Length: 287
Image 1 (tube, rainbow, N blue to C red):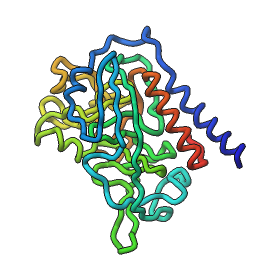
Image 2: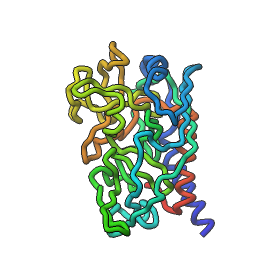
Image 3: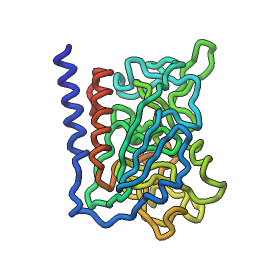
Image 4: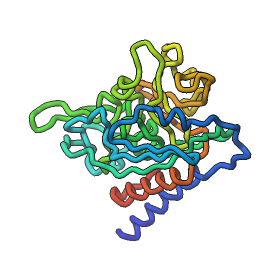
């Protein structure tokens, strides 16, 4: 068993190592500094942010300031134990969300590359709420999370959801994360019928927004590139910037499928540590 587990960990690390390779600046286009906007972003009280030296350091316990549910439907044996999460392989848990010790370093001079990087499993960005963002999929990297929501009954006979109304939930190790637009987060920074403001930053340094453009009109998947990105004006960048848009849709377009910039070494290392941790604690293979 020990040798098998280590073998699976090696597979997991190799699978992630390639897409997280640092891209050459020669293949990039000149970016815009995000430092000023990130300093002014409305970070939650449980988030510590420092900006300087061409990077932002983000620290958090991972529990969103918008709150979490008292119970979540948790797949038995971990989400990776089933091809697609369902209520037939899940039970209610009141201890599903666990405090984390996040410390991520992200560039404030993002550069858009010609070649994109597939968004790996695990965290791909940080949010103003103190939680992290995952790609659109569950652990099989095929099932769109927001299209696979379900409920189970708790001991009192009440329905307990797999994914909460903020489009987030914990993974088997207790890491709370979003898979799409979190309405409870955008409500903290946006006004009704107004434009979206920064709600996070991807690990390549490009900002993350809700689904409203500078005029307050809803953005649709057809307006975005394959990574859910677009170059347009925002309240923080009136001259325009490439940024990612989260959508409230039950499909693979809800979150980032890829990233258009290069990872910082610190962010890439953090993702690898997440893969290693999950592999060790679930003894399951990432796809």
